[in-house]
Amino acid sequence: MPHRAELKLFAGSAHPLLAKEIADVLGVPMGQARLHRFPDTEVAFQIDENIRGKDVFIVQPTCRSVDEHLVELCIMIDAFRRSSAARITAVIPYYGYARQDRKDKPRVPISAKLVANLLSAAGANRILTMDLHKAQIQGFFDIPVDHLFAAPVIIDYLARQQFENVTMVSPDAGGAERARAYAKRLGAELAIIDKRRSTETGAAEVMHVIGDVAGRTCIIQDDIIDTAGTIQKAAGALKKNGAARIIACAVHGVLSGPAIERIENAPIDQLVVTNTIPQDGACQQSKKVVSLSVARLLGQAIRSIHEETSVSSLFV
Image (cartoon, rainbow, N blue to C red):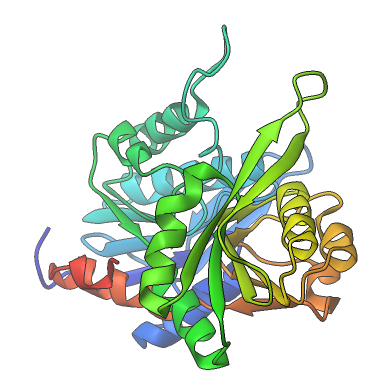
């Protein structure tokens, strides 16, 4: 791709607000295109400007409705490929199907790999994503993947709150490394919740809190909060063990089903998420939920990719 290729930013229907924020950070106008659906729900997409030889970035998290937004993204990529774009980067702040990244039962798919194949087959030249559920998903792609982390955004917010006696809490053993990294940056203690699942129902049951939480501000750190069942149980266990204040943090606030109701009823003072996923009305109305923007971080990464400079300074 010629270094002087013009940067063009386009948005799918999943999160146009985030795309506009990124465009403002970059100081570029949004690309002109039309995305709609035929009466039978098939996707129709047309680019309304010449993008031959351009460096195209498409912002589309594959969030709810996951399948609709994934198909939209593939169709948009195909349209740009057939219109002779010099390079097509799929900017996917939230990568759907990331939790289906292995065969943990007999006769099940590895859906995260299938999605990677679909994006590559559609014609994407590069992927820009954020906080994958497992970092090894990058290896599912045969094209370059820039994997960003929202930690700088969340840590900056938490540091400005000037909480005292802070303990970072991992809601399970698997997230201990992430919680340790946050604790190191904030000068906080570390605690881990030993979460086990019932052999009869499969429901998560909190068994033990490992670490000092009594009288402290406990910040539960996770990558994804979906139905909020784990966070609700974790907060209850921390409160039972004497935590003075409980903050829950997650990069991706999926917040489906009863999530907001559970957050409201749990002993959680605040839920901090980023805007990798657009929040619905119930979430926006909740006084507990704080949404942080990752537009500047994504904008910096897009500029670095476009100018072919290092993106590593954005990693933690």
